[in-house]
Amino acid sequence: MSTGTAGTAPGADGVVRRAVCPGSFDPVTMGHLDIIGRASKLYDEIVIAVLVNKSKSSLFSVEERIDMLTAVTAEYGNVRVDSFHGLLVHYCEAHDIPVIVKGIRAVSDFDYELTMAQMNHGLTGVETLFMPTNPEFSFLRSSLVKEVATWDGDVSRLVPPLVLERLAARLDERR
Ligand code: PNS
Image: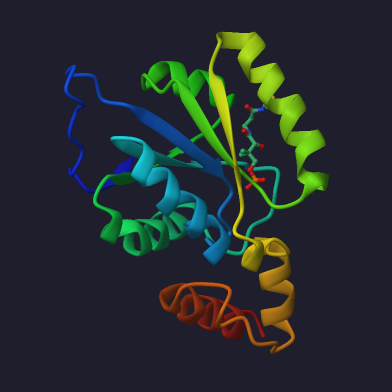
C-alpha cells in the first residue's frame, strides 16, 4: 500500500529524483518531520518507508502509522508513504530509489548508521545521505516520546498535534 500526494515532477532531464526515508515511525515525531521536510526540498519525490517488523511490539499498527504520516506530510506535496519488510535495499531496487536519507542526531548515531550505509552500499550500490538533525530535536526518539507520554509528561512540542491526539487516545485505551 502506498499513500500520499501526486505532486512529483521530474527534473529538466525527465528523471524523477527519488529518495527514501525509512524507519519505524512509532509514532512520527517532529525530529522525523524535520528530516522529511528538508529532504523533500532536495528531491522530486520522497518515499517514507515504514518497516513492518512483526518481531517488535509497537504502539501503533503499520496502517495507523502510515495514516498519521500521510496526514502530517501532506503539506510537502511530494511525499508519499509506503511500508516494506525484509531488506531496505530490496525495497529501493524494486521502487527505483537510489538514495536513502537518514537523520543523524548525535555522534552516537553515526557509528551504527555508518555500518548500515556501508552494508547497504555494498549490497546494491544504494547511496545514503546523512542529514544532521535540527539541534532542537537531537535528543528526540519515538520510544522516549512514548515513555514520557505514558507517565503524563508533556510531549506537545515533540510530535505534531494529530499524533499527540492519537497518542493520548491509545494510551488511554491501554490504561
Ligand atoms: O526507526 P528505526 O527503527 O531506527 O529504523 C530502522 C530501519 C528501518 C531504517 C532499519 O532497521 C532498516 O533499514 N531495516 C530494514 C532491514 C535491513 O535492511 N537491514 C539491513 C541493514 S544494513
